[in-house]
Length: 449
Image 1 (cartoon, rainbow, N blue to C red):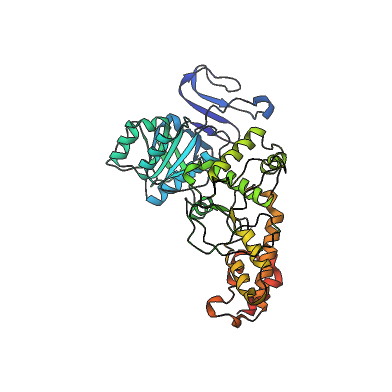
Image 2 (tube, rainbow, N blue to C red):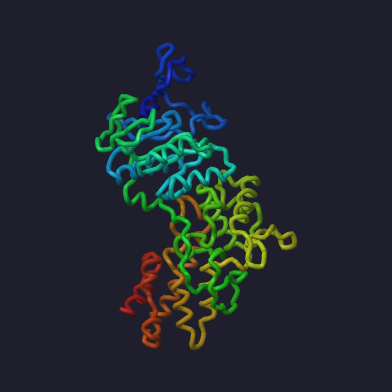
């Protein structure tokens, strides 16, 4: 355990040992203390972090942060109301997936889905996945619902579970896990007997759970879609087609997502980056390798060539081939240079543009309404903090065009269309921030009131 305070830090060891500088202690001791801040350059360590499973339980009575090595505990049982167990377990899982020192480990979450963790519907699904993977790294498994005796037996005896180093799960009084630590969540602060300390456990609120939740391999409903033009400024008249269920579709007019792909083929922690890479390539056809590294990395640490090549390769494999056998993400074009997605990959933003460009004559209002129906929320929204900074201009451009379409529909006489085809401006009022729409959106909405 580690107790981290404002003035000092204390490490509680499993067995006494001679303190290692800069820690101090009374000779051979099980408690090492650090009494002063240490400049970054003094303790900078380029080796792998030594304690990747270190995570915060919560705060002690004096406000100190209490951290615990889950790999040393092995199994942590949470006893309490179901909603409290979920809140505590998911808070710990989220901290591990966002921790800078939790490198080389995989966080598995059963029955729930948060960004960065690998989602599984059941213990059996987890074991099946582990049996099929070649990843030999350690795993931390979070099961907010109590395990059954049969599930405990399978986790204890299955060869596939060999890589599971720590389990955090709800407690069933009738199911015993030898050596497990037990926390009574009904008591606040919660006593941790093994550490002789009471802890106000960290929890995720319902709002925080909603903010970090991620969609779980959801396939889009069968709707009329439109093929993607190969270039952003293509003015082809869209032909209405129903995509094959396995046909990838990039959604940008709302929460960013890739549909029609198999999420089970990708590590959970890589889904966000691969989706961002797909969005960047879609909006920047012909992007060069250096541009990808700069825009998808950070200003201080752009992607290395190995990182970029790894993500491009994973995205190419994830998207797969179209019905003609061609890659949705072709190999780099030696003649024209740069990376670009295949024109066969669907994208709602390109479909929106094609419908607007083709909105002439008798079908004008119908096509504009179909374009507006593609909007599901604020463009390029629900993305991880600090990501998609390259997309700010595209977000504004999408917003402006959505507002233009809404204004045009509202300004026209909606009675020209049957009831089922009348413009539905309410969609825009939900997806576009009022401060960006201004009087135009208010006027468009009032015309249909």
